[in-house]
Amino acid sequence: MSSLLAALTASLLTDGAALRRLTGEVRSAFDKPSDITFTSVSKLPYLDACVKESLRLHPPTPGALPRAVPESGAVIAGRWVPGGTRVYVTILASTQFSANFHQPDLFCPERWLEGSGAEFSKDNRAAYQPFWFGQRNCIGLEMAQLVSRLIICKLLYNFDVEAVSDLEQWRANARVYTVRDYAPMLVRLIPVNSMVVK
Image 1 (cartoon, helix red, strand yellow):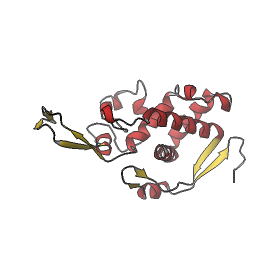
Image 2 (cartoon, helix red, strand yellow):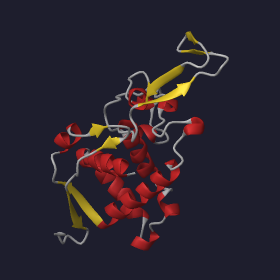
Image 3 (spheres, one colour):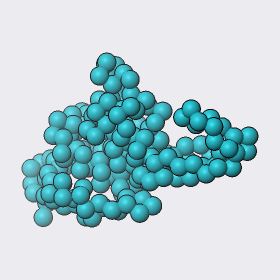
Image 4 (tube, one colour):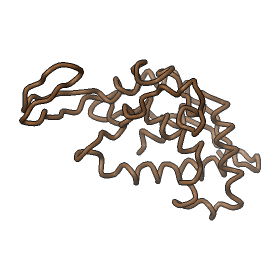
């Protein structure tokens, strides 16, 4: 969950238009902080699009996870693979492959919105599996996304956010083991009432 929040924050701070749009959606959806609940944050389409796009670009487990071919064997990518063979597909490769996503290296939350138009109509959304899929899918998937949505909404409802860290250097310093490991990211939080928090 921390890697999702860090990657989403960095993506929003890099894309001012997306940050303004999401901040506007959040602030117009709620009258007071207590209105921000698990149920209410699930109804924000642009927030959902931003979370999905951040997970597409920065999956928490970007590496290869093994699968075993069924005992009967299978045809994979047009080739016969015998049963019992271990196969690997990296999540990062599938989500940033140009055959799967138009402009795969860009943060484009609009690709996930209904009626996003022709630009993203050929995106292969089935390739979006940031927490893997099937029986070995992450059991914490829904909870991590829900809590992340709640945190982002509370943050953007109460504060304007500015980058202090050099975000390109921050991304370059990220390490991947089994999961992503980001260095701390410094941001400035400015309360909506314009008083700077120190």
